[in-house]
Image 1: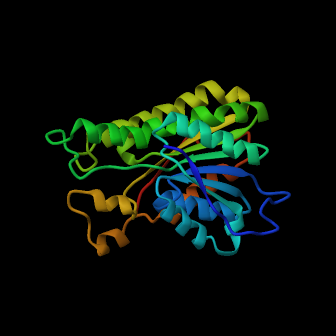
Image 2 (image 1 turned 180 degrees about the vertical axis):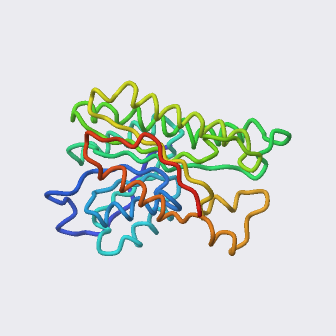
Length: 254
């Protein structure tokens, strides 16, 4: 799949002279990815959002309002490593570097139990939730090493700590793997000035709930974590001094 850039509004400030930093956020067309991107641009970041649906990315752009000129929207299937490499080259041709990578993309399927999970659905889940995160880490680690700094935040799930029938085995496996990827980054890359954080949320009110075998009603969704809660966690982790790292953060609805 060839990555494409969604046109952005013309603005003389489209390249901030002194932005807070340069960030890449996957899954930026909805849910947590959108909330993270919007929170970052409000704090002065220049943000590239990646997603598979151009219309969803454009909606994120519109929601950014006056800060829309801080957003770069790029259509990309992150499960395709070649597409991710092309996107990374495209971004780094425009920016001096990348300070933050947030892997927020994720999916699941209704037929998720072991008794009904198909091989095709298994591969789709792993491709979006784990392989895609690895491809993005692999693509942006070299520039972070050259900079001598960088933060990678992986949006995992409490299903990455405890398996549940509600999540299904493919989702659980992908999230346990994402937690392991986070630990590996810290084990191997800390001497390059790179830090990684795994955020483990409980139930979040996002469109992913619609893929449950029995989607929850509005009153149940209102009691869940909201995407903006996770965005606040991302801001907390990235705003810490460079010598400090939150390696894991578990957050659940009260």
